Length: 102
Image 1 (cartoon, rainbow, N blue to C red):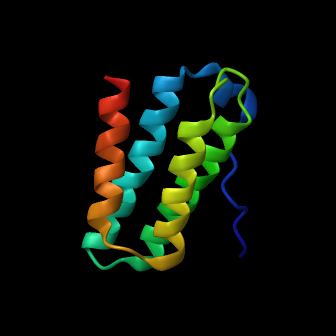
Image 2 (cartoon, one colour):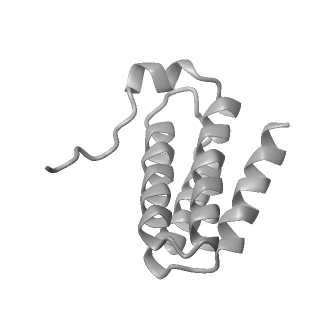
């Protein structure tokens, strides 16, 4: 059985505030951090993939007029995904996102 890749509902995603979108991205990073700490690399990669997909969904959202922060975030997440870097980095990025929304 093949599963479909994760794809958020665009209309629903765009109904969320920017802060809520960042919180959802941070939640996926928190999941990735937890999975990485437990040595569950497949789950870690899946959560990082979902976080990248959510950033892409935010980049497509017209409410984000200044997309520089999102592009930087996407670059950092892609580095995590491609290089399997320390889970502490994903935890740090999630904390920064949550601080930004507070």
